[in-house]
Length: 150
Image (tube, rainbow, N blue to C red; front, side):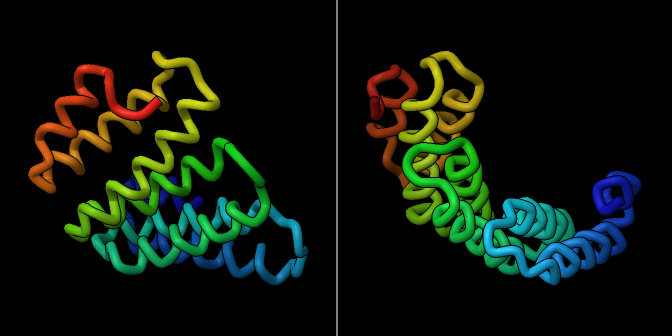
C-alpha cells in the first residue's frame, strides 16, 4: 500500500504505511526474519522520495547490518543493501563513502553474475559516477574501458 500511495504522489502517506508495516514486522520478534531488512529498505526508499536523505541513509544502514548478519559471503541482498547505502551517501555528497559502498557491491556482483549482467553494469556505472564526482577521472576511465575491478 505504501508503494501505491507514493506512486500516486502521496509520499508522506506512503512513508506512513511503510513505517507501520516495519513496526508490525518488528513486533513479530522473530530472530531470523528477512522481512525486517526488506521493510527497512522500503522505509528508506520512502524517506528518499520525500527528500529526507539522512533518514533514508539510517534505514539503509540498518538493513545492511541486518542482511550482513543474515547472509554470509557474497549474496545479492548484501550487494543491494550496499548499493542503497552508496546511493544515500551520493545524494548527501559523501562521494568517498558512496564509492566505498558502490565498489563493495560491484565486487559481490562480479562474483555472482556474468560480466554483462545488468546488476554488474549498474554497479560499474555508479562507481564511475562517484569517481567523477571525486575528480578521479583516471579511475573512472579505467572502469569505462572495462579495466576496473575483477
